[in-house]
Length: 146
Image 1: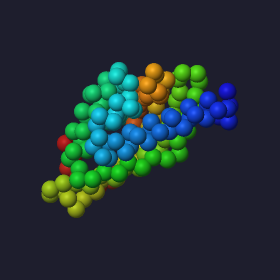
Image 2: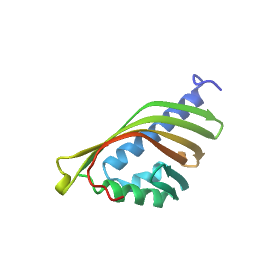
Image 3: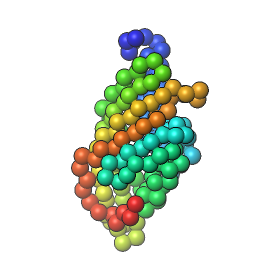
């Protein structure tokens, strides 16, 4: 099936929306919105941080880190999607800005990386079943403990 076929085009659009929902949900601290991003049994491998099993464990980790920031902005680009029936793979670049709190209020942490996702079509739409974050570069210090 080519990308130009209506179903494949719709799948690509929905997957891109799931990927974008992740970034906007975490920046707005809307942790419950991650229900629309990950399967219940999703696995996230944040290389250098650890492997987290289950949507709730993933959400808890993200919340524990990002609530230590006064603001964050996760920008995604170069999204590439390959759909094969009811499964898909996707990659995208990440540029994330984190602003500190308290003694670190004037400091920023910038992370550049890439997400690699395995997605499945569920009764509620596309969801990420496995995500790997590979950080390519980080600069700055905001005193994160997570």
